[in-house]
Image (cartoon, rainbow, N blue to C red; front, top):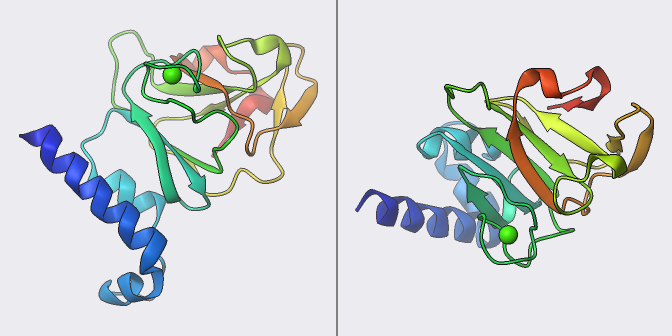
Length: 166
Ligand SMILES: [Ca+2]
């Protein structure tokens, strides 16, 4: 029942964002457009989210509490979603193994050789434009917007300084 209710809420939210943005915004107490913060507050925590428009708008590409080695392949929360993410949100919770950070990768199978970026628990990036991946040697690599192909939950120590975003 809980999952059904959340799924219905997601459909309503997606429809509101894509069709009635201004009207929906006017229903809020302020004129500020709702976005990632509303997704964060509107869902039970534990998930990573990705969207194909800025500020957690447009289509919700997927969400999951787990890892996904291939955003195009079946399973893992993302299917046919590689190279489309424009905004991302880490609404994860505490983890006994400290896996609270989401690492996003340009390539499938968490291939850090081509670069990764880390997003801390509770953070989001409303627009990935201009951000680049960092390789294991901390050298910049490709742009992050519209290129994410896999993600996994990692510990804070797995992320080098330049790799943090959000
Ligand atoms: Ca997948």
